[in-house]
Length: 340
Ligand code: CP3
Image 1: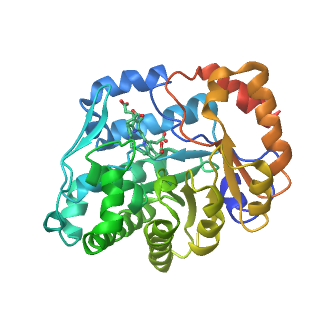
Image 2: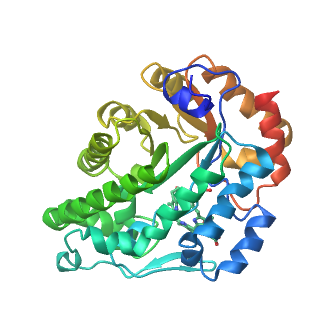
């Protein structure tokens, strides 16, 4: 046992109560986040300010005592690092200049990348110093398919028509973009681990947009390549994979990528979660809206999950990120229920 409950679970231990943290546990539902955010300028400035990014990462740890801290940054810092313009517009979300042609995809330039995003590694180093030793430090990146969606669509998308158009109709350009993102992600996570991240999470939030044939080469294979190269550099690092919306293809993702643990979204039935847990530790999968609702609904949804998954290696979490309208006292009640 390491004295770090989340790491023990990732090593296969069955813990009671299970370790718990929540996706997007730092953010706009916390008044102290909104205060710090005002000091930063834009959202990208906040992500690249080690002092303030460290502060907002620590806020939910201080308030709730979670078992893990997740680095405060964003998956879109990788496109920014490879030279794309990135802005977060109030009420609209991320805006990027969409990639229109293969000629706009450069080979990966590690020095230029680290020069642009190096402050993130400084944030990780500060967190490594600041966190209580029993709290695991999670670094992260978006997975290539999900990050590519923002790069070709120019922001969030309803139908992923451009992304899929590239995957189906422009295989060479698509492969070039995937290769760039695999290289950048390995370089980015390598430095996060070197700075003190013990665990990394790969967010494939739009995995569910990929049909079966695309899922293999756009979700499974790039993820497997990242895990293989990262573990060659850091054999001790643990990787949590999250292929949101992958449904029945989640099994293939869990078996073929080399991830150490599988994060589940709220649409995965608990019987399937249990079956997957026989193969590897699982994390999830409370509906974020049950956390907004609170009361009996939150209690019974939480109980169902605890009953189904507490018998194996399990990390309690949401099935997707906390939403801004979540009352912080519901988070407190959830932790009390889990920990007794
Ligand atoms: O506490 C944490 O979880 C750490 C920080 C974190 C953020 N984004 C902060 C953030 C993490 C791990 C992410 C990951 C992320 N970012 C994902 C994958 C996880 C998921 O939710 O599916 C995705 C798809 C993004 C892209 C992104 N970032 C979008 C679409 C948006 C706009 C929508 C929104 O929620 O505002 C963001 C902005 C963002 N990232 C905010 C935060 C706290 C809100 C920005 C603000 O403060 O105004």
